[in-house]
Amino acid sequence: MEGLSHRMYHLRLVYEKLPVPGWKDIRNTTDIHSFYWIMGGEGEFSHPHDDRPIQVQAGHLLYLKPGFALTMTSSVEHPLHIRMVLFDVLDIPCENQIWLQPVPVDSLQLPFIKSYVQEQAVWIQAQLKQIGAIQNADPHERQTEFQYLLSRLIHYMRDTNESMDPYLKAFHDAKFWMETCYNRPLRLEELARTFHISVSQLRKLFMQHVGISPKEYLNRIRNEKAKTLLLLTEEPMKAVADACGFADEFHFGKMFRAWNEISPARFRSLHKGT
Image 1 (cartoon, one colour):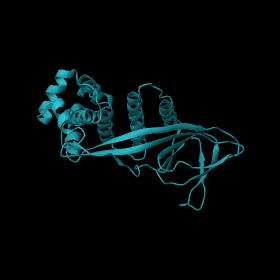
Image 2 (tube, one colour):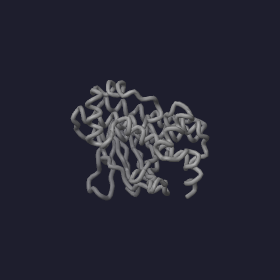
Image 3 (cartoon, rainbow, N blue to C red):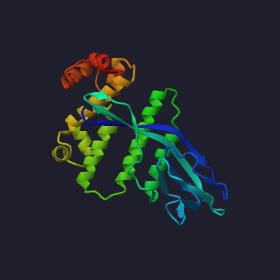
Image 4 (cartoon, rainbow, N blue to C red):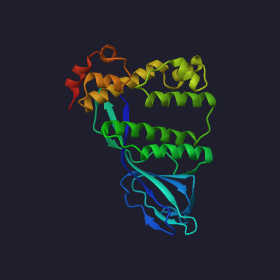
């Protein structure tokens, strides 16, 4: 759909800096986005934009955009233990119902450093542990799982960085659920109950902030995801239907034709490779 884009996160590497007393290092891979999660210990980080070193400790999460230089020094008494996630960020724009070439994203709108309390830190640690444990042999499934986990982590970081009205927070949570779990069955009553809001209030917020109903918003997401898979993969129609949350291939074809006035197979043959 005109004006939409699909954001993709590609995992490059997950590794840990083990707690060795007094180690020093620099950020060597600077052409990529990175999260540095301080799992334990203390130390100092310094970069050219600040005259004074930054004191870091357990519970701190740093986001480093591409090109950001950083020097790290670990405490001798309390050595730093860091988990690092390195990843690429790409936006795939859509114009005139045609997906264009991916465009690298220079920076995410996230704080450079943020401290999390114990309860928050436990949740973040669990997400990063899951990311580090992604070892599925199928690269497509591995990428899908990473996309979901990292999207959820970034959403959480943004959410905890600002204070929200509870109804507005419920709207954002429901919207995010649709954007990341669009392949699952949806009942609006269950979604509203999960995020502690009434169905009517949720519909009202979607109309106010998105301009369409929750169901229409989910349909739009599923439609755009289906187009992406049709154009960027060779997956059969049944696999595309399953991946986008349709009950079966017949239902997928029926809905796709209703939304786009063309069958999925015809859409693929007309636009793939253009």
